[in-house]
Length: 171
Image (cartoon, rainbow, N blue to C red; front, side, top):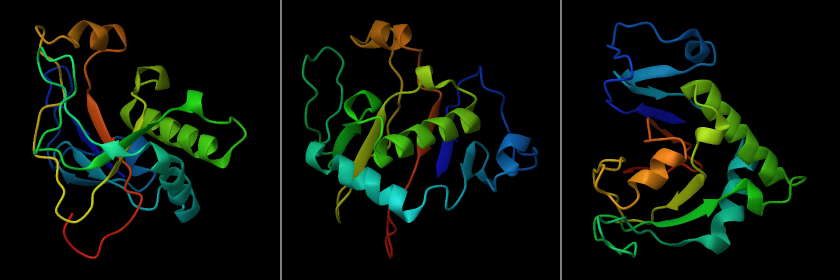
């Protein structure tokens, strides 16, 4: 898992010498840089495979939102494939539902943001040579999605990555 928080002024700043919050250090989270933390082996191999398998049929070319555009256009800066894995679409008795709930609870614990303020799980697949160029994950007040974003919990404060597979190099 890799956690990254926004550099929003409302979030307390940390430095490499600032102690990690106990809720993070007690579960093996390590600081990479100020605002970026890492923990290994949060999900089991089976849980990772469950998420990968459940998302396969929904994978399609990733898109980006553009200011006034009604569509989410393809963009050469984002060439991966993605699928949304949402609890409402899953059998509540399935292993993948349990894993999704575990991810939500871990994210809630690490970020101190309640599940209802979290976005759905976006599963991304990158093949060799695919990318997502650096970008901002927030909406300006004049963006067509701004009011929707604010009404559904507000701007994204955290980005939490769960890496479901390893690669030999790159990434």
